[in-house]
Length: 158
Image 1 (cartoon, rainbow, N blue to C red):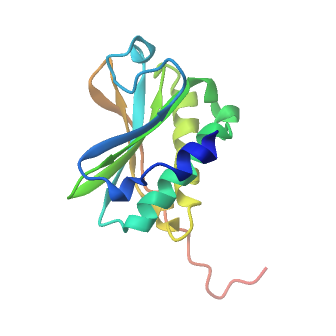
Image 2: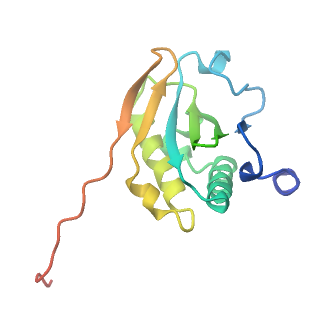
Image 3: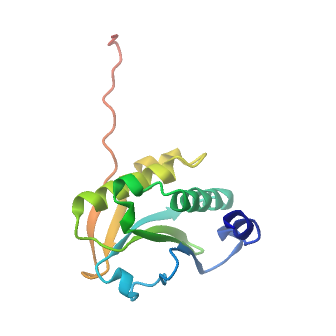
């Protein structure tokens, strides 16, 4: 059913000023939905992203959702994702039903970054900063900063 829906839908890059979403059955992709009363979302802003890359990102995230890639990291909190296509910059967000357990929220955020960065041609997303917006507090409460650069090891052989 997924591939039938996916192959007969327009990809995000073919749409303008729209939010494109994939959510669990019975959950509305809106922060006002009762499922998100204590939730929030991990957001990554994409500036100057190529159309094909945006479509590939959406496919990677969609497959991670239906394949339960977040399950080991607190995946029961994951409710869906939205790609917001805009002319200046697009956003892709992973929505969670609860934001109280910092350990789980951060683990899901790290796995989210891994899913995005594993998309072909988009490995640079591994160094992109992600923010977590808590719907109840209406503020950014967690940040996954850029990972520190690896120490140069020139001249060291082991």
